[in-house]
Length: 176
Image (cartoon, rainbow, N blue to C red; front, top):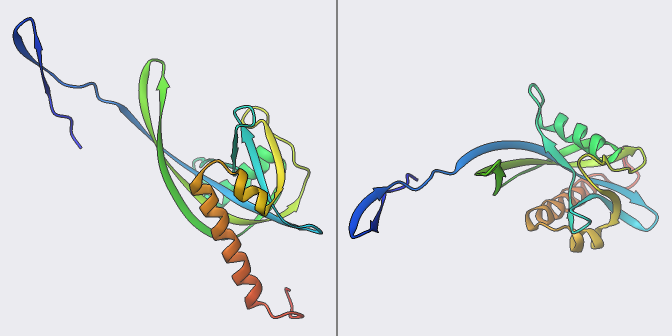
């Protein structure tokens, strides 16, 4: 949508000024809902930022030449120390926020592609340059703690897909 000039009255005269345009930046990321089975039940890998006030799913920017699934695997490993394998796509979310680039406001339009991922190996450890903490949370706790509604929806979608996969494999069948 294009900005319209605004008429401003100054010293009894009308002048026209055009509102300052806000710069925009497009960012494409990928990440994962990483799940693992434990004796106590299913757990979700989560990260914390902003002094633990924000709980989120691991994700990061797509690098040149990468496919979304490759980015998800790399970002999970880099941010958390966990090796995980992609099982299926969960879809994407879109949102925007404003940051300051020097003193200029920039609207960031972000698109994140999420994947259902299965834990393979590794010990959870944060990449301190980007995240402050990493934790395996029981599903019910993760549903409560995740800070963003769109990530909670991705977790719910992952759980539905996992249940559907388990129902397709008959007990005792190969791969169960």
